[in-house]
Amino acid sequence: MVRSFYESVLAQIDQEAKKIGLDPGITSVIKEPERQLIVSIPVVTDSDDIRVFTGYRVQHSSARGPCKGGIRYHPLVTLDEIKALATLMTLKCAVAHIPFGGAKGGITCNPAQLSQREIQRLTKRYAAAILPIIGSKTDIPAPDVNTSADTMGWIMDAVSMYKGQTVLDIVTGKSLELGGSLGRFEATGRGVMLTTLAALEKLHRHPKDTSIVIQGFGNVGSIAAKLLAEKGCKIIGITDISGGIYNPDGLDIPRIYNHVYSTKPPCLLQDYDDKKVSSVTNEELLELETDILIPAALENQITLGNVDHIKAQLIVEGANGPVTDKADGVLNEKKIIVIPGILANSGGVIVSYFEWVQGIQSFFWDLKEVNANLKKLILKSFQEVWDMGQKEATSLRSAAYMLSLKKVAASLEQRGIFP
Ligand code: GLU
Image (tube, helix red, strand yellow):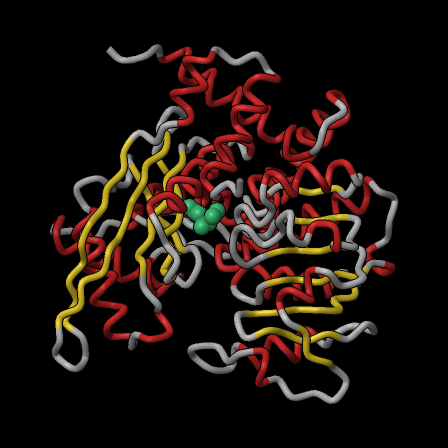
């Protein structure tokens, strides 16, 4: 039986909770989201019709602090997917030692088929619909798949209009003009770069002798590609929704990045013109001969269906949940190391935390300070997860789950079940 993404996350929690001897009652608290909201979002289209979309906000846990997590716009968004992603946010914030719980939101829509003005109206109506449950000290949204600083600005504006004052700390991932943090835009990709290099060091490998393929050329994949290329790694394959490009001698990442991001919305990789590259599909890319594979698109990309064809020795999860739990078992047997998303892509929420703190203090840090603090936090977590993996002779995912579940459980136990 094929498990859904959410079932996969719950199965992993069960497995790791047993290993650390968690009270079954506490495990069942952790497995259930605290609050789930489904909203209907009517939007007047540019042609004056009314279309109704469905949106979600799931607050998985506030045991360790305000709920925190992004909002995604995608045709495949479902309540179950958002529940899985909210659960992973709780674990991610615990791995990173930042005082947040987990949440996630989303709207089932295809932003490629909507105008910017329609997306703006959709976003502001969604913000109004989830307003009763979000707040600077309760639940703080951020960007995720197909959302950006623009989206956060619109949410911030809608909330500010209701509150009668400008509320900076209601969302993170805002533009600098609206109280965002320096370094937030690059943070997730930077975290992927830092954890990848940390793993290479443990494996006594040099970035200059390392080939990498990256699935996804959005905010996470493109920045990770740029930063890893700057460190000397050879990026040999990249894809986006249109498919992608491959060159075993290495791709010219700065040139490709400038090409894709010189237009708004960004153009597709299939339109990139260079005789030195051949085209590759998303499926083929995952199976390329490479040292490192960075899935940085969506969940459920490496499954029992393709895991036997994966040739990379190290997988770094830029996306949330790109490897199913069954495929993860196969990778472990084959001794392919996986840096789990709750560690590898935690750079985004770490700098979101910095942004939130800066907004509350109305005192903003310089880029050097943001990047230095990000590096300090993410490498500390990497070391802890690595050490736990060694001590327990288990995978990095299992170690990261064990560490984070212990932290969430400790908060729940020390607070006591209300009332
Ligand atoms: N959407 C990002 C994630 O999955 C960032 C969340 C945040 O900054 O709150 O980690």
